[in-house]
Image (cartoon, rainbow, N blue to C red; front, top):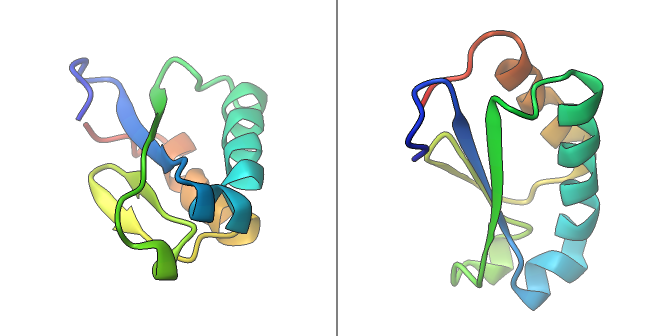
Length: 89
């Protein structure tokens, strides 16, 4: 979790399987979304090594929730909740 009460964490699995299966694109979607909506200071994006759930990947963690089989379309829907004033630490 983020230390700052106004910041939410997004953790992107950068393990080779998740990265090759879509987290490279997902990371680009996240970065573009944050910049386009001027909320880059409200969301902390970090990477992690393999989460041992490769078969369910690409994997992300948002607001402490493990998300699996993420794709850019689904990710954009989830990011809307982060940008709509619903950022929770």
